[in-house]
Amino acid sequence: MGTRITSLSNNFDSTGKLKAAGINNASLSGITALPSGVAGKMTLLSTQTASGDATINFTSSIDSTYDIYCFRYISIHPSGDGRNFEFNASTDGGSNYNVTKTSTSFIAYHNEADSATLLGYEIDGDEAQGTGYVHLAYNVGGDNDQTCSGEMWLYNPSSTTYVKHWINVSDSYQFNDYQSNTFTGGYLNTTSAVNAISFQFSSNNIDAGTIKLYGVSTS
Amino acid sequence: MGQATRNIANSFTTSGVITSSAVNNTTISGITDLTLGGSLILLSEATASASSSISFTSGIDSTYDEYWFVLNNLHPANNDVTFQFNGSIDSGSNYNVTKTTTFFQAYHLENDGGTGLSYITGSDLAQSTSSQPIMRNINNTDADMSGSGIIKLYNPSSTTYVKHFVGMTNYYHIGGATAVGYFAGYFNTTSAINGIQFTANSGNIDDGTIQMFGVK
Image 1 (cartoon, rainbow over the protein chains, first blue to last red):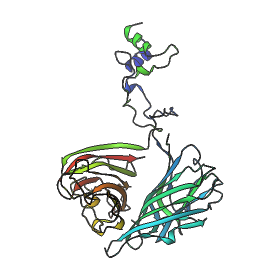
Image 2: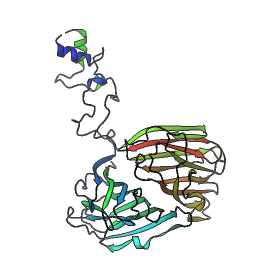
Image 3: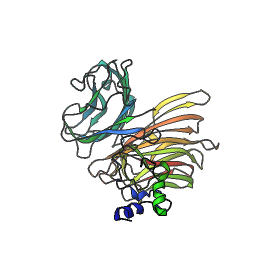
Image 4: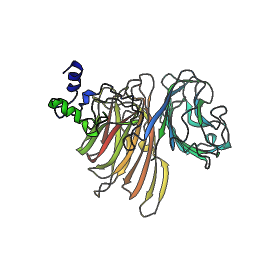
């Protein structure tokens, strides 16, 4: 046999089956789709890393491909002190972030000095048909080690029939050395498709951190 | 054709496409990455069997920026037990990382005789190195009583920031109730967290599984 045939032969076992080592592309990048039941149900669509950004916007991939979208924000650090991390939505691809929303917010906090705890509704963090950015994490500190992390789930953003529900859970290391666990949720009160999401701090920049967008398939 | 060549030829269709039975490793272990694969990667699984602790001392590193611990039917050996967890910065030699945390609980009695939602000061920590409660006062008088839930740990390998975690569990409370616990906090260290340990505040973890996932 020629060299090529010999090499080819070495990639098959004695019964003629292809060996695992006979595949020379460990990531199999040529595969563009997997059958249902093999592919994962949660797919990473986009990752953005902050570096002194006023906003981090996701203006693509939010469509009817997935039923649910999840934003994971990890080690988000403000350039100022005591800033609220917040989001807004767009129905025009990111030209305007001003979708009407009604939401709730409640919080548990505990300070490092062990002198204060709370579980309560956060009236300053809810919205009643407002169009502004809504809080996801409160009073994040600007010390070098202070951040917030959490996740926000957005349901069926491409619906043109229903409002779009969202829920959020986060943990924050606050500027006053309080730890806070925030729960917010609500609906984007529009029957237009939501196709972009924006994140920011209430003032100052997002100094550092990562936000990942996932699509979640339910079928 | 020789036999080897004949065998290879039989692994292809008449049009030259590899047949589905021609790959002798159904998991194709040579593939180490798949762009289209799921974002939730099972890294490790431990099954309790009268275990004094369940520890994860490998796989927690910078590979992933988020780790999930899925707790499934943890059953205590003793009655009225609180399950708890702690972190390590020395790969499991010590589980004593400083934490500040919150814990609140909702419950509902099986006899419909009471409900509640309240902050639990006895299950929070303020700059403490003790273990963080994740399920409180679990009943073990029946074999089916247990607790399950999930803990999400963010960016454990950071050497710049504290490490946040959030968790939610549901458990069979000794008061004859279902109880759901919400807890969160941060490991107040800029050292990398590279070990996580689960224990009971008394006795062993009699049964149950804990899975650790990395989130891509």
